[in-house]
Image (cartoon, rainbow over all chains, first blue to last red; front, side, top):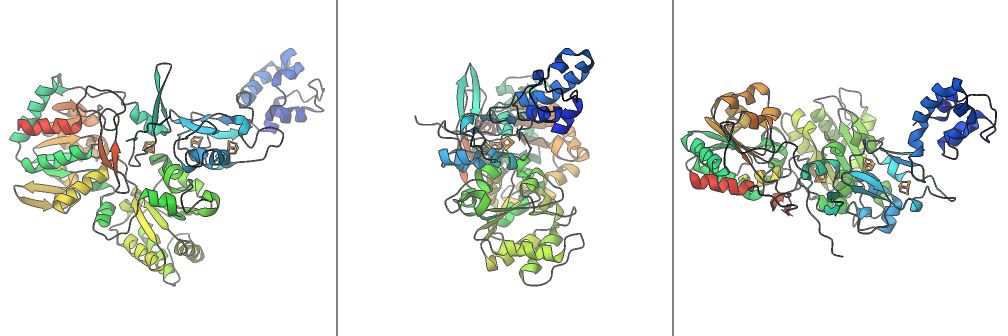
Length: 153
Length: 413
Ligand code: SF4
Ligand code: SF4
Ligand code: SF4
């Protein structure tokens, strides 16, 4: 995933505010956090001179568009199904202490992360600590992943 | 609803919580890692039944195999790490009956550690104890994140256990000692000690010195202070375990530096060592042969007499061309042994029993497809920690179990 600076470099950098943000840099940050989507930058869509950058940007930000409501992306190609994230997730531990919270198969449906067919799958994302208004910067699943297959945007 | 769990035979962790379910006519495998799923979904190129590279019936192939073994003066029986306990037992009987040399992959991997454990030279424990009690976990010369993907999550570092309820963040310390920063070492963060290749013995000796209050010195870039700090962490363990990988076995001339380290640790605390066995039932073969002969591998039968030693190892037997026929089970020496040595298999009649095509099966005179134990037939196996595990059948198959194939070959001899 790109950072805000990389995104900014490809934007028109005119600070025209048509997207509703005060500057292109603010728009870049909003793209990253998924508050805005790329097509809200109308000059990029309409003006021919930006078309090349538009294509590049689309490639950069589209992973974020696939992210779940919490901004979580699982790169399935990198996931080895080790289950570290499953057992490290505090919600999994609270909801299923003997199953997913102990490194075993989950015993109920309230867990957020579980391994299916060798890769991790998300469910009940609204229970993730990073979800909603009172979100906390939980990182259990990210720091325990040996292959960096989980990312938050 | 009662859940039905299966055991994965993808590696010697034998994870026992695998579930299968049908979704849109496809079988989904729950809880197994990617390696396990690939194993359970079976090989891309199943082995065919052949004699002299031509299609044959299992009966013809079995008869031909029996003929080869009967006519041989000194056959070699090798493999068995991916075979059920029953099949391994039959293979040992067959070796006795045919005056064969019998050996397995432990001969060039984890054998010395298993041998030291069975001879009570090294204190070991079970994975269940690790999960319930271990507070200090050392991954030495191994990278389970890749070789045994669920090792950390199911048994060693992350799970909450009976005496480790506060989890890995507070209750456990993971340490990696390796020649490179592996995926497992990344998880150990600051507790990673990078040593040069072949320096494992030196590092073990330095740690032993540190434990006895001396100032440890090593010839590479780890300072005495760091070694003392590590020794301090280790000796404060309530229940410690070292998971020793191939890096340890390959780099030590013999295991004595490790044995001395464990002895020093056990004067102060409770420390254990476990070999990171790869194939799901390698340890099973070692246990069975040990029970019958007192040796875990490299045995040659001559009537009632038993010879044992490097001269009976698969490498020596092939290199010195001592075998005049070979039976290879669930193993692929042509890809795991040095090419020049394994190539000698081409010069003697060779029988391969395996679920999948391998390099070795391509040069074999007789190939007999076998069911995958724990997937296509049931059986038993011994996990990497020495615990016997019951394997269930997951799906229907018309292939014979490896034990049945050996039984039929013995009948035909
Ligand atoms: S961010 Fe925390 S709560 Fe959310 S899935 Fe990851 S570990 Fe679980
Ligand atoms: S920790 Fe990473 S590799 Fe392991 S199951 Fe989770 S996402 Fe996949
Ligand atoms: S860790 Fe080994 S036994 Fe467990 S699911 Fe993966 S391959 Fe199978």
